[in-house]
Structure formats: C-alpha cells, structure tokens
Length: 460
Ligand code: FAD
Ligand code: NAD
Image (cartoon, rainbow, N blue to C red):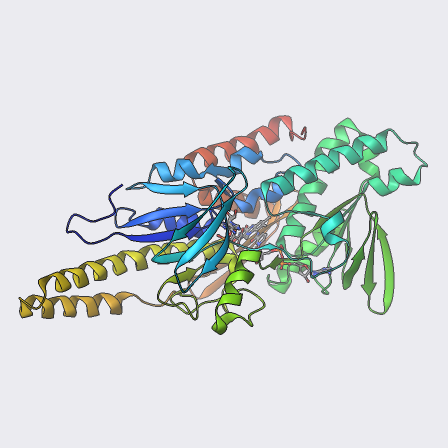
C-alpha cells in the first residue's frame, strides 16, 4: 500500500481500537483511500449485541450474530490492515500505542496521526466480593457459551439427583442480577426456553426451575417510560419470574447471594448466576485516563467534547461508544453507531483540509491568489465540521412470550408500544434491519423461522 498520495503528500495513519459498534461503523463510513487505516482488536469479528441474550438458550445461533472483520475489510475502498491484538498502552505525547497479541504471540508499537478509541466497556462488578469468581456475564460470545453450558450441566445434574435432594433445588435456581435490558431480555429468553422447549423433554425438571431477577431499584427497565416498565413487570410476574426489587446484592459465594432489602439481609441460593449490572471501564481506558491530566479524575469513562475529541488530546485522539462518558449520551449501540457515522464524515473533511494545506505549502508563496483561495476553502470546510448531534430513535426490549416494549421517538413526538404481536413483529423487523450484513440478516431470520417449526437448538 502506498504511504503517499498521488500529489506527493503523506498519507496520515488512523489507528482504530476495537471491532464493535463504534469502530466498525466508522470503518464502513471512512474513505479508506484517504488514510492508512489499521484496526486493532483482540476480537476478530463484529458482534451484534442486541441478539446476544437470545443465544444461550438457542433462540438465535451465535454464528448468526457475528461478522468476521476480514469480511468487512474486504469490501472497503482501499486496503485496511487488521491486527488481532489488544492495545495495552497509549502514549499521547509520542503518538504511539503498544499492542499485544495473545492469539498470535507478538507485541509491537504502532505510530498514529489519529487514534480512535472504541474499546467498549467491561461488566461492572462494583467490587462486590465473589462476583468475578462465581458469576457469568453476558457481554461477549464466550459468556453466552459459558451460560449455555452451565444451564445444560445443571439440568442434567439435577435430573440425576433424587427429587428431595436439596442440591437439585439449588441447581435449578437460575438467578439474574440487574434489571436493566440485558438482565430482563435474558430472563425472558430463559423463561421461553423452559416453558416452550424444556417442558416438552423434561416436564418435571422444567417445572422445578425457578428464575429470579434481582434489581436494586424499585423497578426494572428504568430507562423506559413508567407505563412500559409496569407492563413488563406485570408480564414477568405472570410468567412466573420471581422479581426481587429494591434488592441490592452485597456478596456472592459459591452457591449463595447475600442481598440487602432495606435493613433486611436475605440469602438467595443459586445454581446459575448471571451478572448484568451495567458497564465499567476497561484497563486500556483507565490507562489512557491516567496519562491525561484533563481526564484523569473521570470515573465513568473517557471525557470527550462535542466533536468526539478526547479532552486533553484534541488534536489526535477521538473516542466513541461505551468507553466514553458524555452527559446525554448513553452506552448503547445506537449512540456508538451514530458516532461512527459522524467520525467517518469528520475524517473526510479533515483529509480535504490537509490536502489544501499541503498544496499551499508546496506553492511556497509563489501564487498568493491560490493560497488565499485555499485559506477560504479551509475555513469553509472547518466550519462544516459541526458538533455531533445524537438523534434518539427510541428503545426496544424483548420481555418474553413473543412480547416486546417499544419506546419510540418520532421527531418531537413519542410512540410507546407495549406487548402484543404487533410490537413483537416490530421488534423483530427493527433488529433484522439493524443487522450488519445480508448474511447475518438471513441467518437470524432463518433461526426465527426454525424456532417456529422445530424449537430451540439448545445443544452445546
Ligand atoms: P463494543 O461493541 O463492545 O466493542 C468494543 C470492541 O473493542 C470489541 O471489539 C473489543 O474486542 C475491543 N477491545 C476491547 N479491549 C480492547 C483493547 N485493549 N484494544 C483494542 N480493542 C479492544 N444497545 C442498543 O442500542 N440496543 C440493544 O438492543 C442493545 N442490546 C445489548 C445487549 C447486550 C447483551 C449487551 C451487552 C449490550 C447491548 N447494547 C444494546 C449495548 C451495545 O452493545 C453497546 O452500547 C455497544 O456495543 C457499544 O459499542 P462500542 O463500539 O463502544 O463497544
Ligand atoms: P444497566 O446499567 O442498564 O442496568 C443495570 C441494572 O443493574 C440497573 O438497573 C441497576 O440498578 C442494577 N444493579 C446494579 N448493581 C446492583 C446490585 N448490586 N444488585 C442488584 N441490582 C443492581 O445495564 P445493562 O442492562 O447491562 O445495559 C448496559 C447498557 O446496554 C445500557 O445502556 C443499556 O441501555 C444497553 N442495552 C440496551 C438494550 C436494548 O436496548 N434492548 C439491551 C441490553 C443493553
């Protein structure tokens, strides 16, 4: 790949960290003939997270919701390099990063002109003892695989025990902590699986399974309108999901959760524990924060301005998605996606500005008229780099038994839909439309059709 443009100017290096919603959307909107683009991510595929809660019970197959990075870079305008590695250090002063590849056993430094940080977040345990050791999370593909294996193990192990054995009851207690959309969608999927599939093969075990959803606040799904979360709560209780509200987990050991309900302490036994209490910063995010005085006291993520530039490194580092904290921008795929689109446009305008500056410099004062014209064009382009504006399109959430919530924003007005086949159909259509590729869309649609005729594939 050429490191210079046809006019002799040097191509600038953009290094993008991550292969998630923010990074991949940027890649799709970047004119890759304008820069040397390198993607660094330990995950060599994009993951369509909205359908991840459907995978541990086999409603949707894991392969249907991933898209290899190589298949994305294959269709970019110009060559993009991908390195299957993790960024472990950023030096904003020398504009270098250090990367380590555990998969391919190498480490190296990379130089950048622009760094885009889209490393997402990791599950937040709030430092609660025992969570890291005993809980499963629901953030990545291996998490979903682990939950699936545990469900199957517990069911088979319980089936081998006598009905009066206390271990049997404990193994079949499936507890989910966190009543945000991740916890709710997974609880709903689990209930569907138990009632619709397991019930046919192991009727007695399926009746003994107890699904508990634990939430510290008085309600689940707090980001939704009150009418909608009340609807979801009623449906979940009707579906025999044991909702434990105002219940704050304080400690986890090998098979018991200790929670505080007001002043009362309650012990909840579990066989499977899924922890879904939101996002925390990744080590690389903390590393970067510690390097820049303007952001080193931030606790919730990288602080960015309205142009998505990192405070304290505005000339060279951009950040987007779940690794950032900006009031009014939530850690959702929708936000990361729009930020990726926005940055694609920004980099195009920056390229045009660079080219004009280069031509002026080459001219070396010989043609004053040309330099004046270029300065005018540069100012015009700079004024066109507007602030990022998030357009909230609303939120969707699956709540079980083919029912969903839709809290939609249509211009200035709101449309709130709860339950019913139509909302569920809308939920399905919206997620299909959001899938990154035709391949993924076809596979997910096929999984849903298959579910209708032959049920879930819950083998490992
Ligand atoms: P991610 O998509 O998480 O990508 C981060 C990338 O960075 C990954 O590729 C990771 O491997 C890589 N990375 C990590 N560390 C490093 C490192 N050190 N160096 C280089 N790369 C690194 N949002 C919605 O809007 N709608 C939904 O329906 C929805 N459903 C969800 C369901 C679940 C189960 C979950 C967990 C989240 C859901 N979200 C949803 C939230 C959404 O997934 C996130 O907001 C979105 O993924 C954020 O995008 P991102 O690019 O910031 O991070
Ligand atoms: P969340 O932050 O939305 O919810 C976490 C919940 O856990 C909160 O309600 C919190 O009160 C509770 N909690 C925290 N500590 C607790 C404790 N010790 N004991 C009991 N409860 C505790 O987290 P999430 O559901 O993982 O979602 C993360 C992000 O991803 C959010 O921005 C969310 O909007 C987005 N997301 C969206 C969708 C969707 O749109 N359908 C689906 C999944 C995730």
